[in-house]
Image 1 (cartoon, rainbow, N blue to C red):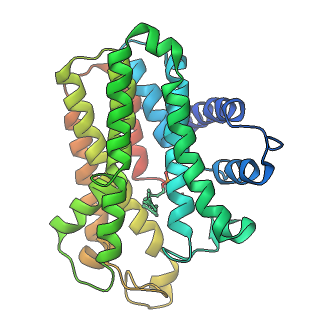
Image 2 (cartoon, rainbow, N blue to C red; image 1 turned 45 degrees about the vertical axis):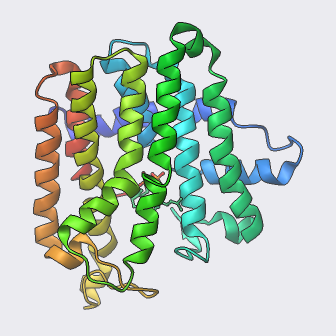
Length: 301
Ligand code: GRG
């Protein structure tokens, strides 16, 4: 860790507040006709999320030498895509969750049909915003097209949606480490990778740099997923003596069910080391990303 945890969480907080402001301006107001869908879209986006994907878009651009504010629309679009995925993931037909981050889930407040439409609307609006980024289009239309395409692919059937499908399919089945890694690199890693690359592509970073950022994001996604699994079981389930990784609704293979809590922690540290290795070609300008990876090991939410 190059800076202390407290100082770094303040840096994240500042960036999160910047993104929140941009989202506030970009999302349609609650009284836009028809109001219910616009209320639900805002409800889904303003739920206390960490804004990691948009932070990565800004950071990729800054690393490429650009002004992060010039890619704020792309950053917000990534958050809308992420928010859509969470709304759909919480639906009764998927994870059937009543709460997300301590707040009632979208379908519990607005009903299932509206929640499906809310996810659809957030995904669609993300592409309305990105394709309407006239400043970026004027600077380099081909790079903007490349970014929109990479983001669509990352969210689609060979990216996040594909990962979600493999995950659903893996319920109540034993899967090995390779399969678990494959599904999470699609389900979680693809959006991180697209976010970091999007900012960097728009900043005209060279291919070597882009490949390195892609590798960082891949390992970051895995570290993030492993720590997610650790946070899910660390505490209650052990205290209550339930089997690690057990779930009231279904059985899923997780990093903690495969490797135990200590094994998962060790794997997370290895992924963070790989993140740092990926950044070897960058100087101190990449310290934020180095710290972000290390910070993942200490996260509590
Ligand atoms: C339903 C299309 C569709 C996709 C769902 C992303 C996803 C795929 C499901 C989310 C469920 C989940 C717990 C995934 C594991 C890690 C993860 C992506 C957690 C949520 O991301 P955070 O922690 O969310 O960045 P916040 O709340 O900070 O926005």
